[in-house]
Image (cartoon, rainbow, N blue to C red):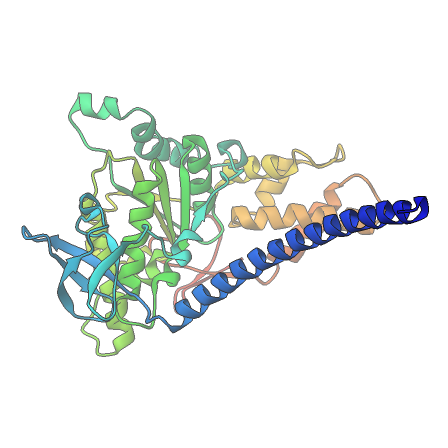
Length: 404
């Protein structure tokens, strides 16, 4: 063998070695792709099996029998006696536990987690209200009463146990619109550092039979889980009106919801860190069952502010406003007889807007006089139960309106 043929053989051998390494790398790459495609194939097979598999049926455990079977209430309607899969931890099967049933054999195959109605969950105010008692003017007596019946039992329940008395379960705030009822409830929730659950009573009026009562149950269940908590039911007269012999299905459903609310108020301990505050503008239309002792047994009136109250409300809403020296809050309070706290807030806002329109950075007395004229001019306010004539105000008793 010549030297040239020997060098060619060496070069060819090196070429084959490089080629073998390239092929080995390519084979490794193809094996990786094959493994990836097998995983994808298994994934899609599982997805197809899930799509083809019959759905599971949701049910609630009613009882567990001695032989290991369970009595469940199916979401489809009937009550069933079913077997339990061996892989299920039977210690988790308690009355009220949600489970999943196999559609073919009606066997419990899974224990479902507890879930909350998203509609009820949305009622919880996660962040504490930013309203404090310093933001409320002219309601010192009402604030003191609320602290005694709501804040004190939540913070110091041992005081009531030592005295052998039970605090009120519920507090009802009534009075004209715009006088601070909802504001009081928000301030109490902030001071107590409690979970604040707010709902408008009209949200409980549902068109399907039993839906309103179910929402009431779930709201109070959420309040117990989130204790200490305060449940605010705004405008409770929407479902709490006096029950009459009526024939419409809608009114009967509202009566069922009211009955469930009464049962919930009766069913919890007044010291279990859940307090109920309700507000209404119409105390006269409420069902007497709501007002009896043991339910809303603390009734607090939130009336129209008097002269001192209006002065304090003006102080609250003008403390951050750049006022001219001629602004006399006492005189403004005298000129706004019959106005609510909401009216006074609107007057302060309108006075500030007039100063801005005039190109000024200070609010003058004339701005407030203009705002009073604009906000209160030709305004009338409907009167409800217990509103008396005060001062020189005229009441049109035939129409039930107070003219300002």
